[in-house]
Image (tube, rainbow, N blue to C red; front, side, top):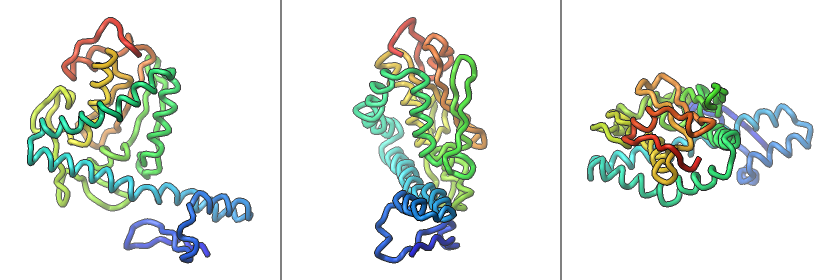
Length: 250
C-alpha cells in the first residue's frame, strides 16, 4: 500500500509504503501506477522522484565543501586546491574533456543540460534551468545552481541557512588565485568550476565552457558555451592568468 505523506519533521514528502514495498524503485512504482490507470498517483510519484534524490545530493555537496574547508584550515588553501586538482585532472575533468571533444557545441549543451536538470537547481530545486541562444554562445542559467548556488544562498525548500554562516561556517578563499578567477572570497566548493576551465586550457588551449560566477549569491549561476573557440573573449583567459592562444583543440 502506497502512502506519500508530508512529514513536518522532514519538511518534505516521504514514501511510507508497507515494508514489502519499500525496496521498490519509485520509477517502477510510476510505471505500475500508469499501467493500473492510477494517473493521479503516477503524477504524485513523478514529482516525488526529484525530492527523493535531493536529500542525498545535497548531503554530498555540503560534505564536499566541508571537507575542502577542513583541508584548507589544517593544511592551507594551496594544499586544498592541490587535492581538488588531483581528482579533476586525473579522471573527472579529463574524461569530460575527451568526451566533449567528440561532440558538437550543441550536443555539449544538451548533455550539460541533462546534468544540470539532475542537479536540483532552480528556486524549487526541481532542476529548472534556462538555456538561451545568445548569438555567439549558448548559455545555461541556474537560479541558483543546485550545489554552490544553493549552499551560498541557503535552502528555502529545506529551511536551512547559507553554508557560509553558522552552524556550517564553510570556507572561502582568503586570497585571490588564478584558480579562483583572480578573486578572493570564492567558496571552496565553487573552485572546481574554475578548474573546469583551467584544465582544458592546459590540455587543448581553450575551455569547453566558461562560468558566469558572480560574487553576489542572489544572482544566477551560468555556464557559457561559445560556438567557436575564437569567439571566447580574452577576459576569460586573463582572469585565470592565461593568454588566449591563436589555436587549440575545441
